[in-house]
Length: 258
Figure 1 (cartoon, rainbow, N blue to C red):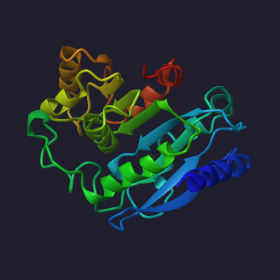
Figure 2 (cartoon, rainbow, N blue to C red):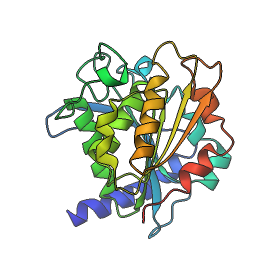
Figure 3 (cartoon, rainbow, N blue to C red):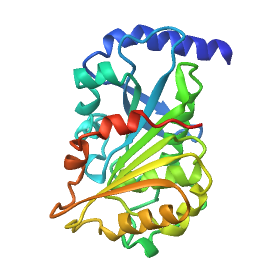
Figure 4 (cartoon, rainbow, N blue to C red):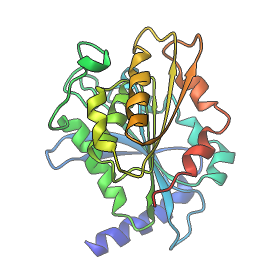
């Protein structure tokens, strides 16, 4: 196992040069034989022996498919921006959800009302594959385990809530954008050193803004370090003003677990 981890680290060093301005394409096969397409970049000018943060990005329902490309539509360029690449070197993962699947749930929930959102004992297979993919990167000694971040928009925000509820010990920060969750699910986050920043548009007619408002109130009551930013007049595409929020990247990359 140690040899595998070291070889993986060396591979990342070699690929760092090739990944300066584009995401590399890969496929991950889970323990249940589910194939997960994903794109990734590694830190620019990665130095041997140095550790870097890791960002897991979960796209929305509109970017599902099998082309291993659409998942980069929203947010992908943000991490390729030369200034951000230099200022915030990181491992960044963009998995792609298959067309008929749905992050965190076997299928699209019947209602996005927070109290009617499902609570499942197990993650669906494709989302288990995402967690296994994340685990393989966490085995890399150059990934800083104190700075693991997750970002999700819409369907991906629902997946973000699911991940931090199931594995609150992993993530230093989470940014769910225009998502929803059953508030009782968030009780599992209590007592964990995780920082959450929620974004939503108050005119969202796809995922009701109550999802984010209730999530914020619940996390706040649990003593979680949480901030809620609501955009007046903004419909479902609240990821656009979120990504352009003045300190979006700075806030994310300054979060660290004790």
